[in-house]
Amino acid sequence: MPRLFSPAATGVWRHRLNKRLGRANALIAIVVSLALLVLFFSRGEPTPAPAFYPFETTSAFFPVANHDAQNKTIEQLCASFPHHLTQKIQPVLKMGHGENRKMVDAQLESVSACFGPDELLVFSDLDDLIYGRHAIDILANLPRAYRDGDNEGNANADYANYEAMYALARDGELTADNDPARGKNGWRLDKYKFLAGVERAWQMRPDRDFYVFYESDTYISWDNMFRFLSTLDPQSPLYMGSPSPGRRDEKKKVDTWFANGGPGFVLSRGAMEKLMRRRSSPAGSQFTDPPISLKWLDLVRSDPCGDSILGWALWNAGVPLSGFFPLFNTYAAHTLPYTERLWCQPFLTMHKLKPEDMKTLWRWENERRKLGHPLLYSDLYEFLPVTNPDVRHNWDNTNWDRLAPGKDTFVDSLQACKEACEASPTCLQYHWQGEQTRKCVLQRFINLGVARDSETVKKKVPIPEGGRRKDGADKGEQQFELVEEKITYTSGWIKQRIDDWVKDHMCYTPEWVYPSTERYY
Image 1 (cartoon, rainbow, N blue to C red):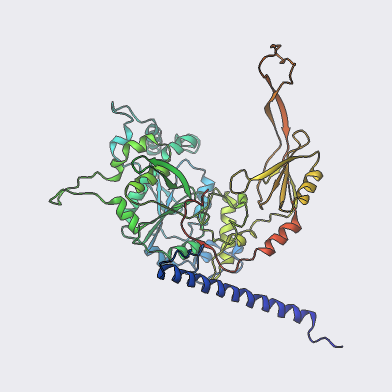
Image 2 (image 1 turned 180 degrees about the horizontal axis):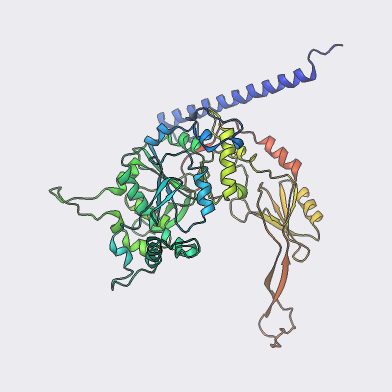
């Protein structure tokens, strides 16, 4: 009996059918979500709101994607950037002169590359010209009280480093090697830039719809960010980012939250207006409130974290945090623990990317943008080859956090560790720490990880009952001794099981999450 279709034609037919089914499922999901929204807002009954924001978004880039982006110049890639949106959305890059210059270069050759000199605000701790952009020293004009560390007028040690750096720069003697604001000293200066940066951004670019604040090691998908902000009302007082636990409000008996500065944060025009608002005298001729740079001076001097200070100032202005994890993400691309919680959601920002990852990811994204669909974590999974090879020596793929914990077991070999993972139905990858520790970590998530050399660590172990310590002490209460233990790092992935997991978790609609501080890192 002759075949009605050739194998090739059958494959094409199946491919088209799958695409149509995917589109149909996506349409059904949107219709259902919209119906739930209507029911939720029109009826008094406690109908649960949908878990994800259902509306479709579109790209403002043209062309949306760039073919062969890895081989094109920055100018060619930036030709598609939607500059008209910078009239509404203000990007603000915070950096320090003493930072790793490779990281700063990578930022300005990728995420921040397409902004014109008048579009991007760059705030630093030293006036400088970087890639044709003016880096503004926002510490120079802070009130003199910032330089005084206490009521007696003793100098603030943090500002001593700043002033030493400024003097070297003024005399033309500042170098990467003698910079007093490198490393920890630079980090101590960083806390002064948060409130000052928000205040200066409002002064220089007032009344923008949204202000996007980020750092040199922050990756931003501007296509996804523009889509996200297009769904929000800029006049609402919105303070958005990845939630971190903040100070406790003792008057209201509640714990507050702030946006982790590393993945960046966004303030709406409504939030900026509330933060900058100052009371005036009855006649209205004089302010009775100080500017925020003076209002929170004591807190800035005492709290080591500038992002926490900003969050507390916003809370007191009536602007609580809207937590949008995992859209704003503290992870870097190579340390992401892929789970159902980080899969069908769009990614807006990530933190602590390596300079080379920052640039290659930006070019990869230029090739992958889609008109009606934001890039998701499931798309990002293809950026770094997790399971190729399926075993890596001198490599650590563990991720010790509450989002994706591992399960410890003890075996005598790498092969036994792999077999233990295969015997556990939910295990996707494993990690073995060598013959001396025998520790095998079974993991239910997918993570690439980082290179890590073997190391020898000192470990405190109990001396068996009746024994004596090496120093000859008598037995009594439990005694301990220090022993050296060699740890090796070997990581493996169950490739077929991971491939099956990926196929079983197709993303038909983007999961734009609603704000929550229950869902945080």
